[in-house]
Image (tube, rainbow, N blue to C red; front, side):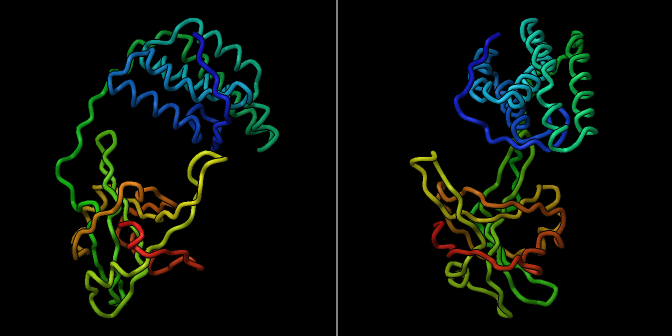
Length: 281
């Protein structure tokens, strides 16, 4: 099996020694399984995933091939030629060298053990291949995108958040909230929030030579299960329409309970970068 090599580095980040243990590997693996579950053929998966391969960097090549081989083995479709290619690339120990140089000999040895475990695993037939999965989006959402929600801090000050988007992925529902800088002893009106600012940052968008900086909001992300436990802390004020092209995200904080959620208002980062909410409408 020959998979095309891309011309650009992936800009991947590697967090640990495991096969699926960094941004590059996670993105590739999730893309593979999303396509598989959507009914794509192996040829279609190969075409789309193969564009991420970068043979110019030995470590990235190792990450790509081991991740792709593992995914194919899990669905029971690993061909003999890719198994041999995986053995050949693993034998070069590019990842072992990177971990040894950047994190020390102990991490290098851990990476080597993970690669050996992978080869042992995929060298045997998978007797229980993963089937294509069908995920169902939840039809009952707690709040709607664009909804302005007000709440009170323990000190009784009123604050506000705006629901940027509701994301459904693999049967899970996540909510992304913007952080309004509004604070007042008085309950806000719609105009108060429309003319308030939200926390965000400027990021680079587009190709290196033709891109530009855009302003995007920082968000608080929470799951439907977590949010349901403290949804009664919010009061819906109104709903605004946020432009689709304004729904990109800067940084992300996860909240598992109401205390986590309000921490951005109780203990705001200094200095806070912000822009007017009206810029997103």
